[in-house]
Image (cartoon, rainbow, N blue to C red; front, side, top):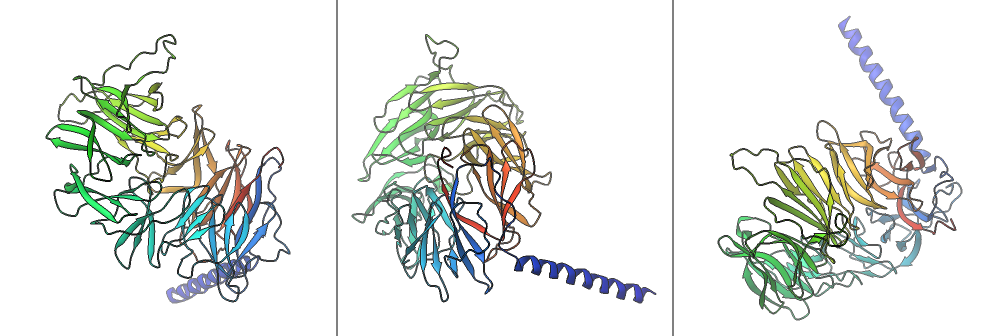
Length: 543
């Protein structure tokens, strides 16, 4: 009897497996498909390019006059391509022609343009600098919004530097160069003792550290090929991070010349050192290299101030006048522990009350401000949580410029304060992880399950009014949220789902859908079996 039961179980299992496999194959044969029309209230979505599976196991491209068009009867614009997938289809990317269809293309604003890509460039993944420049990684290509494509070197690898700018490495010679963020042009490669930690926006100057202790800052001029060690970087020999950024006059950094005395210095490309401020407490540099938020301790008291990194001028931060409109008051002295981060022209500053030094890290009251750096004015953020420690949220991929979202973590409660480039400060509850700013004062968050793993079935959107809305995605355990875009009408989210395990061609788990920003209703699946690889935006008044 046991043998009969086991045999029956095996037959049943094979039957279920065969049925599931046949169903999947049938669904795959029907792809790509438009599942539903775009809701009429969604406005501003223009032309689009979809990457789709074709019958010969190749990935082709479909060019649509308008996102949401039916796919029936469309002739592929490309029949066999390799597409460089990015995090935002509104930014430029490239597709390399393969097989019998060798036509390459640049994809910009939902349109497809013929181009001939360099033979050695690799069209795989891209990261976006802004709406006018994207860069692939391995055998990297630079792609601009006007359709220009560049190749730094035959075996170049491009990445975002830890402290700003984009660098490329010549893997054949172990040399490094920079990328001009406005044109996409690459600088010549130079020899450096280690991978650069920063590059100027025009890609000309690179900053790195010497490989031997005590480690020193090296600034290289890629135009002349000259490089020189300069100042010793405190703590770098122990693997510690140090604040620093390229400015219009050199590289500004926080260093320690004598025990217990911290100073901000500016090192020019020729190696000259100018001290800007000393002594100083907490420092957070603006990514654009113009200013820094600092705790000025020269008077013996800690004063929250803004340091101009060009002139060296120090301006104490005052209130924004909401409490005393006729006479904005200087903020009270800092007596506790300060943590700060910067996005755009704004800094988010949190002060924890002084630690009673009991040997236990007990939660303490905190206060927070959003500081506009250009005016040195602060707006208080109410109801910040108690914490034993506040830390700066680290991006998985460092931002290339000033337009990235910043955030501070509060321990042990795991609450978050996010800072958008426009100065908007938003609180998020435990169990969330900041993802990106959507614009219009909204921030997108990943939700975490009790196990700590990322949830894919729902997203959280917070806004400056204190609103918190969970957005259903309909994603299964074998899918991930690839990208999310706030539509021009500001009322909907365009969401792309892809398989958790990366595939070489679109399949049944690749979905493009639209969800309401207020979380009501069910998401509308527009396309299945397709990647949205390029999207144009049209004025909502004419859409």
